[in-house]
Length: 194
Image 1 (cartoon, helix red, strand yellow):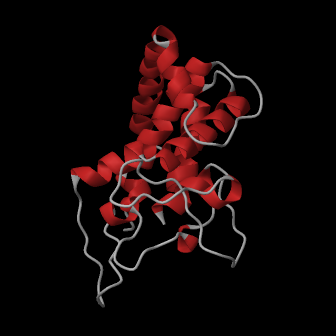
Image 2 (cartoon, helix red, strand yellow):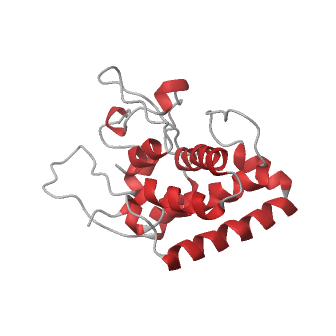
């Protein structure tokens, strides 16, 4: 649900029903890595993810997916640093952050507050409070200063994933908004079901 929410918010989710299993992005170094799909296969719902009997996708394992070799009445619920690392660094989530950031910057231009409000609403289904807005606007400004001073880091970040943006936008601004969106995708209001 977390992955699907990120893909849906960034308009990358492919909702076609049925068909064979797909192989989305996976950790580059894992026990038995699987060759990833390209194109629409990367963005299908998580329900269609290729799954070995005793080994779900590494990102799913970090987020408490149960193995299928035993029956489980109720899933475990944990909150660990590994989960935060997955949510902040998984290529699928970084790509979804980048694509959403590109759409937000294309739609709002230099209006950072408008970008923050729309990103927050898309990811949490509510408007941010004044304090949340101020904090996220400050984060965007700090990140933009960082990426303006380090254009190579912005280029590396914006190269994540196979989805290509349409049109040219300032890379430092898109990278800054990407980091803000990625941080929001790790926010408990976006991850936890309460």
